[in-house]
Image (cartoon, rainbow, N blue to C red; front, side, top):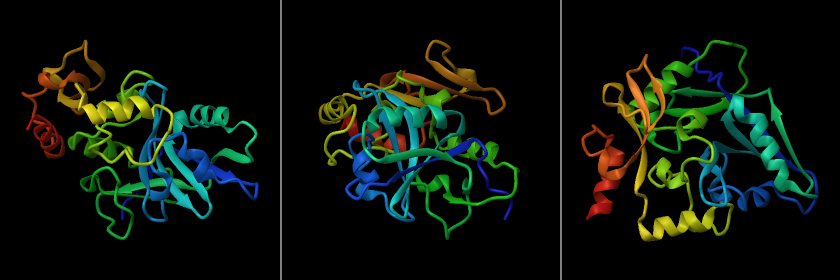
Length: 249
């Protein structure tokens, strides 16, 4: 197999040292996913939101024994760890970036965990790696071809409501887990079906710079935050077409 390492991803370890402390309980009141669903071999995509329901950081949650590992953008790892520490208060919770494991991805690796957002993205796992070779470009090209956005450049920070990032359709939120930061507005939007805007991957030759988050000239693509009624002319991925059709019925 060719090198699969995603060099642009970093890892944070969340661990509890007190007998009554639980890193799952700590994260349960913060992130959009139900921590009980995070089990060995079944990572979950999640986010940390503002009180208004806008995304600050998106990441993957992995179970590692009693610990939880957060798979996030490497450039945002320190900022995310610092943010999480604000919520720690006096809990005996350790929050540290780590270097002994790396994130890997491949379109063909059926013995590995499937990407929790969309199976067509491929497979994702954590392991030690001695190589500096990168699969980042192939990974970005493939996920964008499927209309899947992620990270600070595409989602923004405190700019986009989590459900506008297609979090429902890509399994990035639990509506049954109870309270977490930003839960009230997120649940209200879902209940009232008021997701009026979406992040979409558009052809660069149809780009609207006023709505553009980031452009990828090498891929001929533009990531844009558009009103739902303004994306009907795009060749949307099947998963998004189905979701929008269901909401108009």
